[in-house]
Length: 147
Image (tube, rainbow, N blue to C red; front, side):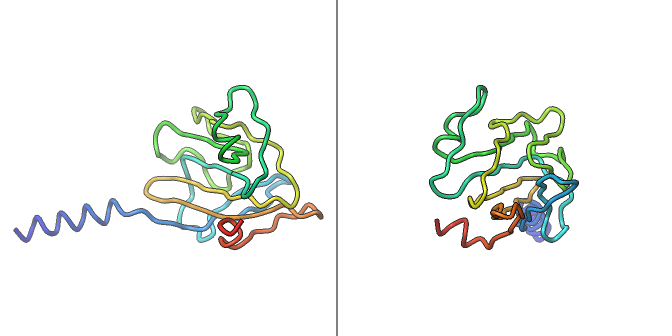
């Protein structure tokens, strides 16, 4: 009986997910995303969506619903939640065999964007904008949820 309790506890610990912050930054002149706490070095999926009423124009092949209703500017969906992309993840750059549900769109200045990542047992989230001076400004989560 005691052994089954240990197994159950082990299963629960292994199935727990971890949440971490994602920061927007510039790497070699390009927009990139990194883990805020360096706990995870890789992810399987990433999505960037406008917060509020701003919408991108859907391209052929894009998931129309994600763009029109969800405000997606870039969205990937790996077939397996595995280590397919390494941090830093460059905006619009994907690993081989990772489909894009929404191809990367040009981002606009002063629009608030949320970024979400997914990996093995972990989820990342962040909020940023590109200022009029063309600088990346990471924002608190309140910016992503109050608009």
